[in-house]
Length: 585
Image (cartoon, rainbow, N blue to C red; front, side, top):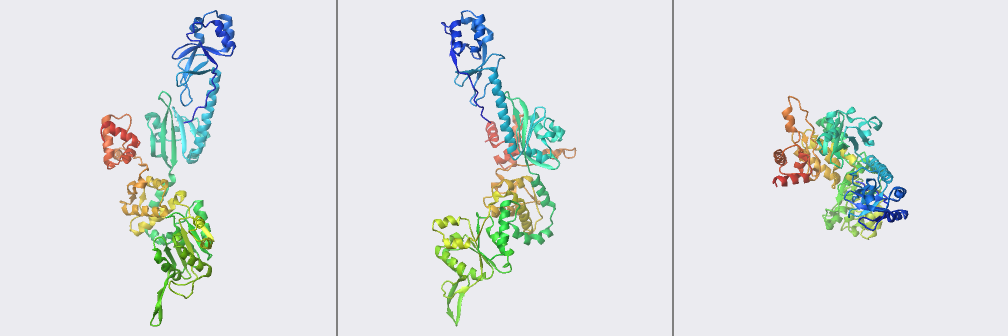
């Protein structure tokens, strides 16, 4: 996970292994020169004499090197230096300095035990600092326990979710604060399996999506467990509210009002837009709305109109992106015919039809430069002439324009008139896309469910927790328009007043986990628990049982391997490998 920092090795070495001319005197001279001497190298150890050994040699050794290589006192263990900077475990116990061999098999240097201890303490402190910062940075609750179930990490998010300060749980067994049978992190200590994207209810009032893994030492033995939990309690509560809080009659009474509240939300981004929209609604100045397709520009224009003094007058729209270019002028400004029986004939355009009201011009960047000039003339003079006519017509229609493009950059490129841009840009509102304000999705979900339940004369449906999670995790490239269409689809397809993952479009289903609620086994419902619960692959089942589970999962998911993998509680890659192993492809 983190690289090991390089350990300082003493590289001042000389080799006299198999050197017949080497004597005690030559070795001691090397030591006086500050060099360590390596003798008699084997696979796991070597005779190593360091400068600190010089007084001992001078006191007790005579003239041959064989005496040194045979003395166990000078045998030093050899460690292998791994690619990540770590060292292999010492296989022998010795108080001598340790030799380090690199990945090419060459001796890289040696280190005294005090240096190894200093380095080990430093690395422990550094890793603790990294892990502490990581656990305090993530947005999920993080719990780490040792092999006995004692809590050794409890991050701030866990404190918040469970209202349990770390001082009350660190160093204590986790079962003291939670029901033991509900703890996933204890189950992985016993079963040794990974848990991914699994619904969990550690307490009666808490719902989480959990990922958990066993922690293994270098020999593969389980020494602890780690779990991260995403709090989905609010999503589950919203599900309960949508199920019971509103009746069909209440829907009918409030639907018309809430249809105009589609832009409202709790987030600061949309809150600022709505704050400015309320202020500009009371004025008569033009408004420019900027935002991606489907963010609700027309809905916001309608809100501005309905909130202002023109609310009782007409609100009309023109979409420059769908009206043929040759008809746009007539659509906006109308046309003037010839004389017939003494009366002029012709037709008023949207600008004239919306007299004293509001005209919303969407995709205004699609207007030709000639029509941009004519629209600017109206904004500056409040008069215009119909196509083919010569009479100046005065109307007081408010203009709200919208675009998905940055009009300022189009002005710089000369494809949008600067005078029209500045006339429209008295107040400019930039509407954030839905992916930047996921906190607003529950309110919109609530509103559209009521709207379409009323429209299709269906009871208000319940939502599975994983459906709510799917709505919150999806990026919504089509913004509010896509959200609205998905909800309408779900209401149409739902059976028995319930919306599940299968009712969602494939794009929302693709990466969403299945959060099956655990079924409590009782004498009366034991068989029901077996059929309702998910069947998961475990290390303890036989090959025949594994094949049967895979066959059953593929049958239940109509051959969809991704869905079958989720049902079995394994990754898609693991399922593919298992299918290949059993010849099931």
